[in-house]
Length: 359
Image (cartoon, rainbow, N blue to C red; front, side, top):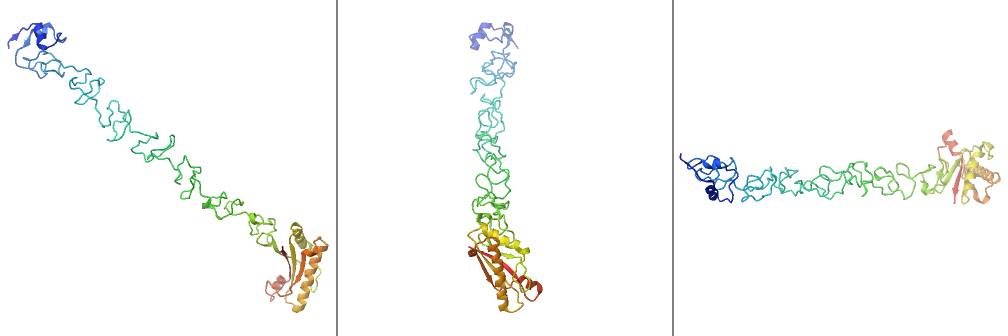
């Protein structure tokens, strides 16, 4: 192959540059192959290559000279749609940074490169989390959770006791599962007695009535009438009371000798109980009832029971100072038995004195 000597100025003019390329030296320009081959492997035949020593891999123009690539991304400026790409960043065929997950944020800036396609992301390429709960909006079932509230993997506030009220609003976070609660997460207390319905054995207690741990009204004297309705809260145990909790009847443990109406001093304590009650309740009167068994004639027993009732009445008046108009004596004889007269035990029960209180 013949070699052609071309003056440097001629090469400069042919290449179209105002100044000769720095890569060419006088020595190299002196001997340029005239035909056949591509010495620098740039795709331009040596016979037409004005820059025959271009480094391999560099993009060249039709004359074999390096094309301008300002951001050095391998894409000539004339084709580069992103001419200011930072050096070293991987680009596509248009010279723009690669965006593998197509979220609009280039891989080199994308902190969440595997974001599902179509998901709204922030400027760092991560899915948007509007309520800042750590769960991205596209997965968040509760996107308006208040800031700072602990959430589950679905982005919803935790509800530890599963009562339908989130922990951050729940004033009773340990409510048993399945219990009906109010908007504050506390078990319903329909009668407002301080005992939740699910534990309340008396759910219809009047408001403000004192209750026990079961939600039932207190009955301090255990007379069957709750304190809130008991006009006589200190009634002795076992005494029959009326609807207001006041003594209705007291059976006096008084025993008489046969065919006698005399009350022995040993039994005055029984009568004193009646006297004290009458003094505590001046509006109350008492009926002293006398009863016998069926031994003897009915007429005789009626008179005997009246005498015994009168004897108790007199003790109330004379010994304990109860006004006579508050004490009535009434004998019933054998007409109101409470047990069978066929046995000694039954007859003993029928021989009795009862104090009935009335208003």
